Amino acid sequence: MILIREASEVFLPDGVATHASVLIEDGRIRDIGRQVTARGAEVIDARGKTLLPGWVDSHTHVVFAGSREFELDLKLQGATYREIAARGGGIGYTVQQTRRVSEERLQAEAELRLDAMLAHGTTTAEVKSGYGLDTKSEVKMLRTVRHLNERHPVDLVPTFMGAHAIPPGVDREDYVRLVREEMIPRVAEEQLAVFCDVFCEEGYFSVEESRAILQAGREHGLTPRVHADELSDSGGAELAAELKAASADHLLMASPRGLKKMARAGVPAVLLPAVPFSLMQKRYAPARKMLELGLDVALATDLNPNCWTENMQFVIQLACFAMGMTPREAIHGATLGGARVLGLEREVGSIEVGKKADLLLVNAPSHLFVPYHFGVNLVETVIKDGVVVCGG
Image 1 (cartoon, rainbow, N blue to C red):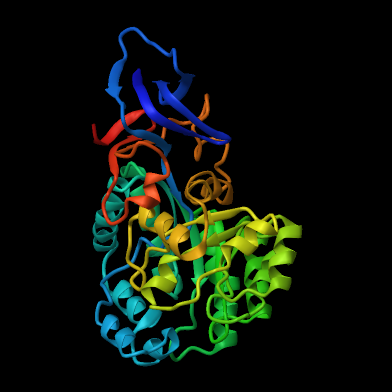
Image 2: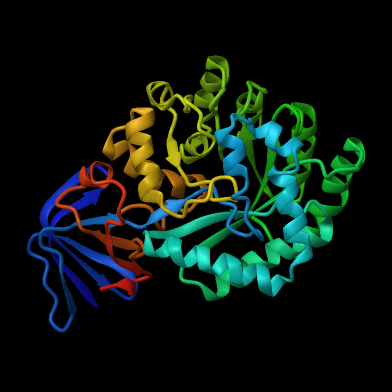
């Protein structure tokens, strides 16, 4: 048993509890309130600090090899995402690096990123493939995710994303057929993924190609998700609504029509504000418009070689400063919002009796300080499944 005693604030789904304690037993939250006691429990003094749910990072590409820091100079010269890719950077560069390394090397590199994520408060994360772009390498990536999930404290949810880009020198129709008829059946046979994602974007996969791939995934038990409308209004939001996907992600350029269709279909939006930040763009996803439409908005890092951050606190801060979300909205998006996207909302994402004790004790007198005090790691203690795994 662990008793987290007298937190200045406990962040609850419908408000906050002040000067409250939380009792953890057998990895679960057993009690919340001002008069909570437990004989023999390990006591963590939380006075002056805030207790939050562990972050649920619902969109990452944690598994990859190498880095692309050389792209920063190109961005500073004004090169766009597509121009960088055309000059030998982008997804294609990381595919080359990822294909040539062993599964053990992939695992070692990804484990360091997961360590950093955990230290900054992430206790659950989705992880996509998509830097293999052939059957052997995509399977290698997803096996790496499985092995990491078995050994690392962060719970990982795997996503197949063979439809991340068309490999150089490969015919489009042939590659879409390969994804549908070889990769997806193989991934399903080995039970390597929960979701199937596709980059529905001009220059990557059309709406028609994306629909065919996601329908093939669904036929093999993989739930659809969509990288939608990041660089242009490509129709990705409408496709996500049509398929009732688990989420549509990015949405910087989504049309009002597409967002309304998503709202009617109950499709959550996953917003990734570190991406336009990393690309030095002025335009961010219209979070306020989405919230006004009634969309459930989740936040995630999109950790990848182009947007290399393991820090969900930074994402929350960007959501407030660049997208106009309130601290409560942003923290909800980084916790329960992400859990709903991953279908884990009954287990994680909020501080409620009976849920898993995935909790963060942060050096802040209230949740308002998470975006307010930026540029540092505010997490003092990370509790995963009722066990202190960082700090304490």
